[in-house]
Length: 107
Length: 257
Image (cartoon, rainbow over all chains, first blue to last red; front, top):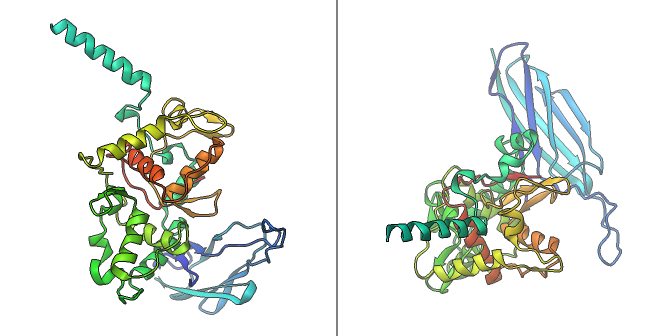
């Protein structure tokens, strides 16, 4: 099934206001340390990187590791500078790649 | 004569107190026993991972499937209207089967009978997604389990399972959840076992899960042999639990620790 992402960005903000951004991505985050009942290693399958860009400028980046729980929830804040688009990009093992975007009006 | 009636009343009251049923005013959802952080997670639709399954379910609702080439939406239309309150009424007596069916079973019956598609496996992403999507439409509504003459024997069977001691630990459900709720079992608070939020996201599972998965967990904890998914015993127990929680508010998809 196609991976889903949920992002929460305030629709409106005042210039210079600190805004909170919350993201949730559907992913199993298989650690690569677990074994099947027959002892075979289950290969690692995790989200490796998350990047948020604000009108093309990177404002937040995170590296993810095997100890992070399934369906990673990432919340952070940035300063509302101008109206435009925030893009969110998750990449990971096995060619995992999801892009989501949200619009914000500043003024 | 009046004195005799009063005496019978007192005896009946004493008997019900002995059975340890939770008075309606004292009933509390598992939500009330959670930490502030976990409650915030459930309440925020962008932090509640259960909503990921709801999104999936919405897509499945509109997807044509099976030999009939029909989507759920082709018969039921907009789920926000047609599925409102449905989860609050299940398990519901099904005249054709002659017994109550759970929400998951109802979805699979629709698949096999109407869509002519193979039933979805229990705890599969698809079945959980559809169940979560349907259950989400009942959020905020009170549980309404109507017990008529046909459903009564199944309710009684569910209650019997609730009261029967099982497993190597020789425990009955009610010993924990009626008699000792609010106390600690190791590091966790014992909740009252009201199924108000299923299917729900359990942090321990790192996934959404059905009420039957939770019941099987409990049975394994009692070191009893868990009933198979979809077993009549589990559906009857579901029916009893939903009846016991009647009037309480649906929270699906809930979050639990």
